[in-house]
Structures are given as structure tokens and as C-alpha cells.
Length: 276
Image (cartoon, rainbow, N blue to C red; front, side, top):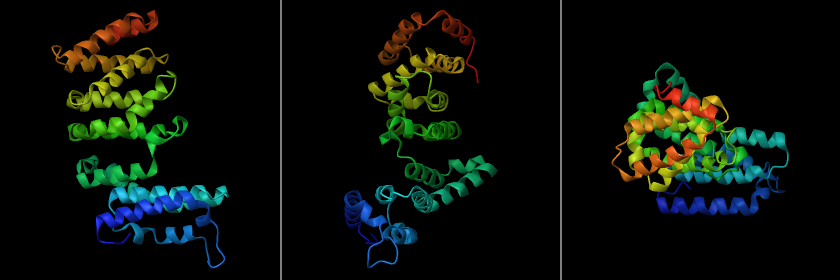
């Protein structure tokens, strides 16, 4: 993996993850000719192995080691291996968060954004996880990042929606009472990166609108208000002559007509202005 050529590194990483998937238990067992399990040696040399890899190659490598660690049957030992594996990215996270605590402007630095993105990718493989294992803190972090960076993040919104928006939507459309962090994230996009909504695909926009409608129907008062505020802000910014937005508006009107009286009361109250 220390080869100079990108294609050779790609091949090495792809081969390693295939071996890790097929032979993971051999990496965590100490073989007769070894002084320690091979996974321990990998973790000790982690920086040396990954220092010349691209971010995507590092993610592949970490995923491969994750497969290996999952084969460790001893849970306390497995937790130690995970802690060792995540030591480098988590140290980078802690360092960046310490800087943010002193000065939020560090999040405007593109190099710091890359660090943040890479650490999040390595910690949470969000969109491929089962719903109950998707950490809601990911949505809270994305909402905060969107609020802080504002227009700087606009071009990245479609990719972010692909990664965390659509997977969460399959969770909230089956259970209105859980995952309220999803709506906070949408409101952050609406408030700070509205131009991004003009460039997303019609399917993504429909999903965006569906989530607002489901928020309005939410049994929790705060989430219903958040949904109504999203709706108010969204249409305040929209050009009504655009067909996509007109259809969305009509759909929203039809859905609001079917909302129970208690939520409808909130609806009319909220149209006095969005709540912060």
C-alpha cells in the first residue's frame, strides 16, 4: 500500500478488503508462528500503512480492519481493538473540536472541512447501516455544520442528502415519533443553503417535501412546528412560477387539509412568522 502509483494502491486496498472479508477470523487468532495476532501488528503500524493513501483508500482500509475486528469473539478485547483503530481519526477530531471551541471560523477552512468529513466517514458508515444503528448525532452534526458554514456548503448539499437524508427518510415515514433530528437538519438546509434546493433532482426535492409534510403531521408539538416553519421559509424563498415548486405547493395544501384540528391550529399560528 506504500506504492507510489494510485492504481497500485487502489488494487492493494481492494485486495486487502476482500481478504479481510473472507479470512477475518485468522487475523484475530494468534497463529503458531506469530508472537501476537496479526490484527495487533496492523494497528501498531496503522499510521505507517495509511500515511501515503488517499482519503478514499484510507476509508477502504479502515472498513477492511473493521471486518477483521468484528471476528473477535471477546467483546472487551474487541472494544480495545476498535479504540486502537479509531485513535488517529478521533485525535484529529478532538484537536479540531478544541479549535472550534476557541474560534468557529476554523470551520471555514477547507482543509479542516476535509478532516471533518474524513473523520465522520470513518466513524459512521451511515447510509449502509441498519436503521437502529444509525447514530442520530450524525444528523445533529450535519445540521450544525450546515448552520455554521451556510452558503459555503451549498454545492455539497446534494451529496449530503444522498448520504444521510434518503436513508433516514425510510425510517421516519414508518415511525413519526422518532428521529426528530432529521427535521432539524432539513431546516438548517432550508435556512442556510436554499439555492441547493434549486439544483437537486425532482426525486430528491419530492423526498424533501415529503419529510416536511410528515413533520407537520408529527405527534410531537415541537417537530410539527419545525415542519411548519420549514414550509413557511421554503415557500417564502421560492419562485411560484416554477412548475416544480407549484406542484410541491399544491401537494402541501392538499396534505394540510387532512391534518387533524390540533395541528391545524399550530399551522395558522406559525404563519405569523417562523420561530427560531
